[in-house]
Length: 265
Image (cartoon, rainbow, N blue to C red):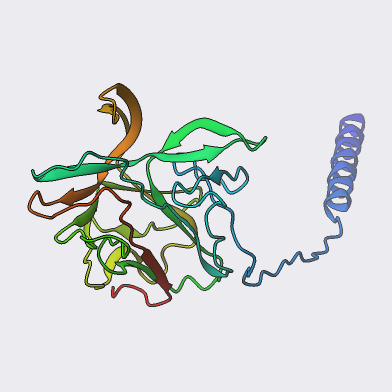
């Protein structure tokens, strides 16, 4: 009986020792430090991006079909218009019928300054790098009718530009997208048309709005020879057959305006 009691006492002492060791091991010291990073609005301009894959890490060089010196540079940030396509409706035979002419697709230069095989829909690009998530509004207006002051019939009376079927894209993650106008009918008298609106808490980052898709169509030149050209049918110029036309170039300009007035929620 005495041996049994001694053995039980030994087991109890071993168990107590193990328990005491575990308690000591669990008593590790802990200390907390901090990490921080600040951001400020970015006033640098943002380069144009491919509207089909709008990644600012991979900028592109759009060609301006109306200016051999290239497109105008984008505006400075933090709320900026980075690029807007100039619209080339081609070389067309004079017609006394109502006609619709399609804008040539947006073309680009490659890294070597040569014309790239890349063609996309015509587009406009904006960037909101304010960091305030305050919303914005993009509008466009046509500064008068297509004109040529050096000829007899100076104006393409009744001509109308329309832009339809917009696609809005960005590489921004988890950001509410701006809303694009489904159809824009430009007013040659100069009234503004809404292009895109971002409500409060929406539209941060870089966004593109491209109209339609690129299609290849067959046209004929002055010698009645057929050739193929890439166009965007959703960017169109309608010209009445009753409007007299001279064998000259007619032109107009578009003004794009980006304001920090958000759409009402």
